[in-house]
Image (cartoon, rainbow, N blue to C red; front, side, top):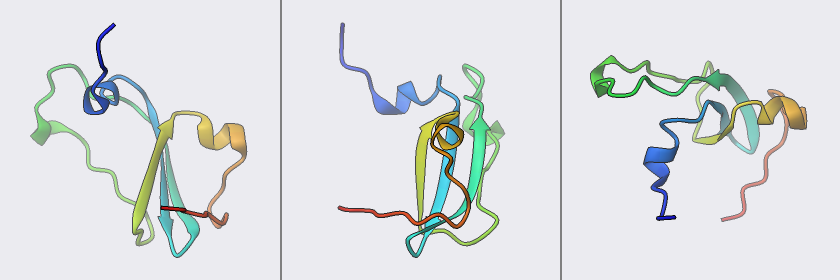
Length: 79
């Protein structure tokens, strides 16, 4: 098996987008479908949070529900 390019991989996996600001989840966009194969970039939907965010965590769809994440939950980012 060859190396998998992250940008190519996310084109095929539904995602949960967890929007973060000031150490808290400020919004979640759940079950974002992958784009259609061959779709032009200018035809893709634009996703943004309802509240201002400084970061977005993209995880496999269903992860937020599985872990019980909700808006207002604290987030620790250790870089």
